[in-house]
Image (cartoon, rainbow, N blue to C red; front, side, top):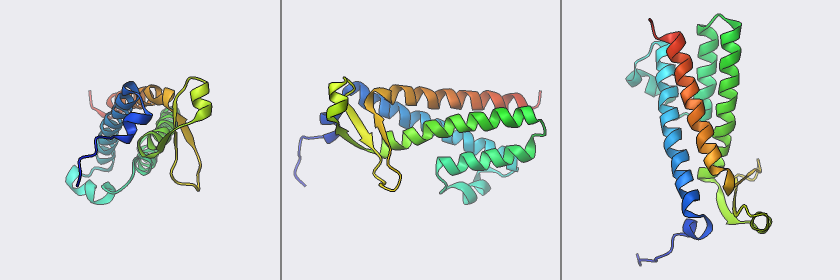
Length: 161
């Protein structure tokens, strides 16, 4: 294979935007590992046994499972409501993560004129969506914040004192 010295992403996105996409990927990996760990804790399964059930699930499905297990585990309506809202926020950030990581990045003339640069389009035409490059750092931050809040919530209510 010839060595072609072109990386398409570098011609569409800035170094900061590429770094932000990397942050989104890394923060998502931490989040997903935590979600899996909590699912195993709530279900009483070891990681080895639990992986059989959820290993191929996407993060959105794991969040749905986490929500359902939490509804069973927690009796307090206040706790259930808080967790439901938190998972909703995480799922919203995850939807933008999917676009950032899996979308097709292009130079959008309207975005360029408004100073926002590139734009990602969801490659799945059944559910059109887009994400401006200037929002990438915000997506990474929202994923990180959601991960932190999830950790604090379950640390407070699951770990014996």
